[in-house]
Length: 111
Image (tube, rainbow, N blue to C red; front, side):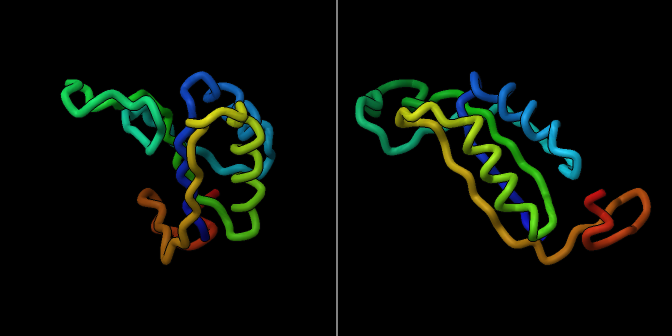
């Protein structure tokens, strides 16, 4: 099982969510609105009260191993503008997933 975290531009969120929702086997996603900064030119100086942070949308999901690359591809395809700051996608291996309500574990906990 894999965990996917993606940091994307907020204005691209609806397009990405629509594309993920259309995939029949996609189990679900959690969205958070966070702030951060990357290593880009033109970032405000240290004296800026916000430290040069910008709002980004963070998507998190857990999927079967075989679905991880497809999900990452869908996110990238629908989040890309071709400009710096489009975001990042991270894929990590999960050792275990347990559904709280039923106690199901493994891939059955993802459904």
